[in-house]
Image (cartoon, rainbow, N blue to C red; front, side, top):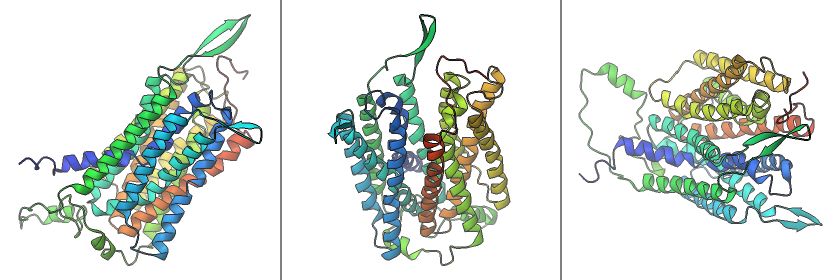
Length: 436
């Protein structure tokens, strides 16, 4: 009786969400803490450019994993790889909390070398987690991959909430000698505490994964199926695989046996393309211009867009627990609908610092709603595609992770020169009314 609650499905879902939270929590934490660290580190506001490049180099991890799967199929122990990834991430977060503000003089120029090195390590871990965590999910029934994506949503939500409690980017407009200037308020706690919070989240993720791997391995006794439940059995067939016994994970050997012989069908390629495009927009293109879309209205619009958008992510994934859209045409229309909101937000960024309805409550509401719907629709699309690919086989989840990383990388590399080199988008200045 003591172990009955521990072996229940609810506990498995909770552990799965906390495990998935560790996938991208490091990079998300670095982004939300940038306004604090840029005031301390010598690179200043060039730091976001460095961070983008380091995240791009972090894709060396997924490349290495993909090459290993190709050259030595079945040889990579995903469980051991995940343990190593999580240990490396936790160690890097500890060093980050201690040494983030230390600088080194290189060729007569002061550089924040410890911060940059540790940022690369965390980026490498996050990128590699996509192509290791997702294939590991093949050991569980499809409903757990939806919980996995809910946990990934937490990896953006929790750091965001923590940053709001820290009071990041709070300012007051003060008049000095007839000139209005912004005065940035001191945070409620320093960046060091924030990075210790990152360590706590990574530790929780690692402990959750350890708990998942050490849970009961013998399948519980299943009740005899009812003969009259033909319709129900067909429905359950979509959610059940012959490798699965309830929520019990299967072994490495069983996973290797169950490989889909014909993965590269037109439908699967279509799903991978949709997944890559959605991640290019949600992880690369739109985040690069979020400040341009929101700050011309006011800081509150920006904060609401960030927070409510990050809340929409896990909520959309939670919706997929009850309804999975399996129609290829339906998924295409869903992508187009989300693309409309993405186009509207890109148009606002292009028109910054003078977007339409700038001084109107309607304009502010439209921006916030657009971010919520855009994030929610694409989040739902991603978890549905992940579910459908899960049913195809273990290799499909590897390619699912590769598509996510490839799309994110292409989106980020596309926007980097537009934002940081050619400065296509114009920033709104704090406490200064734009001349429109």
